[in-house]
Amino acid sequence: MIEQIRQDVEGLDALAILQYVENKFANKAVFSTSFGIEDQVITDLLSRVNTHADIFTLETGRLFPETYYVWNRTLDKYKLPIKTYYPNTQSVEKLVTTKGPSSFYESVENRKECCYIRKIEPLKRAIQGYSVWITGIRADQSENREDMHQVEWDEVNQLIKIHPLFYWTYQDVVDFIKENFIPYNPLHDKGFPSIGCQPCTRAVQEGDDFRAGRWWWEDKSKKECGLHSVTKN
Image 1 (spheres, rainbow, N blue to C red):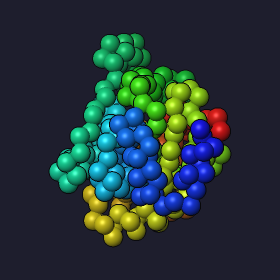
Image 2: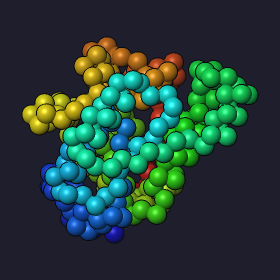
Image 3: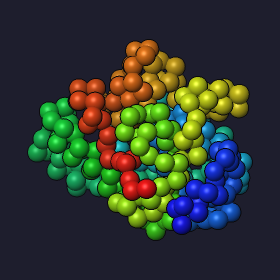
Image 4: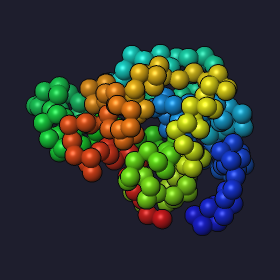
């Protein structure tokens, strides 16, 4: 099926890809948004195809105030329901009680534990029962993601992943946002190309890697939380 879908969407623009997903999968598709600039493009395009796909976000408890700002503006503009998933309360309580509120700075293992509790476990609940997971991933966001494909099989989560903006550049995204008056996170104008949890994200310098501001205290090769690890082709 993966090869057939790849052939079907080859050469299509992002809107046409989402229309294809709507026609073929409808409410068996789900889109994950973190309200980053790419995700805002996808939300806008989904509104144009009158999507039956569900939209969700992960509320980690550590988001920037600016993220809540664009979240509200997105709801106001598009009137699309965005289901919210929180981490398991007992897991967060245990983590903070035993290791404190900033254990993720102490080791990669601690950081991955925090990511698992706040992001991975809620994600698994969010995508359960769906056939297709739509994301805002672009190929040039990191070296790791250059090994991915526009359409791929997620072996871990047992579903198809489709990235409609896979071949877009960051400038393509910025231009589309401005041309279509799409609400976006103001942190993008302050040197934040990639925005996650507030304690784990900072601004980058011009010319830095796209994800240089994420988990900046760690080695570059370890800078993934596990949400979008390279999957089987």
